[in-house]
Amino acid sequence: MENKKPLILITNDDGYQAKGLKKLVSLMRPLGEVVVISTEKVMSAKGHSITTTPDLTVRLVESGPDYKEYICNGTPVDCVKVGYQWLLERFPDLVVSGINHGSNASINVIYSGTMAAAIEACMDGINAIGFSLDCYDLDADFDHLDGYITAITKKVLREGLPDGICLNVNFPARSEEPFKGLRVCRQAKAKWIEVYSECLDESGGTCLKLGGKFICEDEGEDTDYYALKHNFVSLVPTHFDLTATQYMDDMQRFEHVLELES
Amino acid sequence: MENKKPLILITNDDGYQAKGLKKLVSLMRPLGEVVVISTEKVMSAKGHSITTTPDLTVRLVESGPDYKEYICNGTPVDCVKVGYQWLLERFPDLVVSGINHGSNASINVIYSGTMAAAIEACMDGINAIGFSLDCYDLDADFDHLDGYITAITKKVLREGLPDGICLNVNFPARSEEPFKGLRVCRQAKAKWIEVYSECLDESGGTCLKLGGKFICEDEGEDTDYYALKHNFVSLVPTHFDLTATQYMDDMQRFEHVLELES
Image (cartoon, rainbow over all chains, first blue to last red; front, side, top):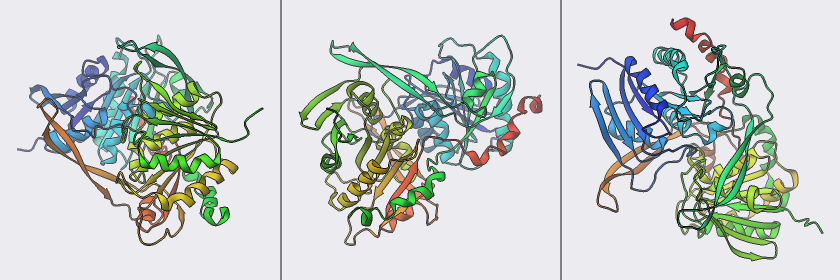
């Protein structure tokens, strides 16, 4: 008999022990058949990196009714790929990634392993959502997210998402006030200013350590950055087309570049 | 006295010994003061991954008039960041990345370390170009690219690019016919179907090896995929805003998701 429950694949980039992952699993289990393929190590800021060398491993660590849990030594995108191209017998109805410890709003989406996993899934036509909390604390409080995560997930399972997009959902850290609501936003234009400092590596050699400062000069009130700052949940429809369509006409000036230069 | 030559930072994702890198260096040296920060190892498919652990190293391997060459053990994005946030005394006028051994057209841009380096630079307001050849051969012939690479680079140095975009330039592999010209394109919608196979890792354990098949069902004649297939050089203006703007209105249905579900 066919299993009528939706099949939900969960992954993350903070490692299999992360509190955010455990919270997400607890919220997804009532909604369907759940398969977790988490990262073995912390894979934050691994972007859309994939493992092309032959040393990817994935091992089953728990199995029960409507529930399986695997740990994969690769990146979040590896977890998603290996999930439905190797482990699962059918494509999942939904891929959820997170809950990330730290914001993936604004430019963070570019570096994010959590969001890369969701983007990978939507490239394959699978509904996908990345959830992130604007707090890096390993012991962050995620309980105030329950209602929204369940409601958004149920809605996506029921109605689906347009082909080729996934959702980048970010939550403000816990405060004394409840969330003001949910806002559909665009990705804020921001950047990180890196600060490198010299330090010693494990073998006593000199190496560089990355630090950074987040700079957002985008003052738009329609951005995810603005929403989070004002205690709204932000939702950005996210795709994988990097074409800067608005500059296609301007770029025509390159079409005869050879003749112009010679 | 101020150095009036433009400062050009070169990086890549195929390692410091790559033939494509050496070709790019030879084409850039007549155009300005050149600093190369290449990857130590092959860093293909590392996307926008960055090194957040304190073990990044960068070492000077050659120094001469208007020329310096470093090797960095990190990703292409690390190379760019460490270049102008640590090594260089001023921001470069241009970052060029490549020439990649393999196409970065279509969905490949998402996985590409070469293009991630260019995108990182344009996030910081620096003119940037990624050059790639649609041929994975380590000994590929790059000589038919010379005219275009020089002409495009000179034009960018002279005129600049709009804020927040970089160029994703892809070349067809050498054939008997010369290129038909250059086309400004959008990124084709395509994907990879992964094929995993079991193999033994170095210690004799079982692991997975990634293979794949590229599928392009996008039949648009305005895509980079189409251009390359028809022997045109493709140029895609590329940005870092992943917002699927066309679905912002549709997503409004999530704004009252809590009330709707309860």
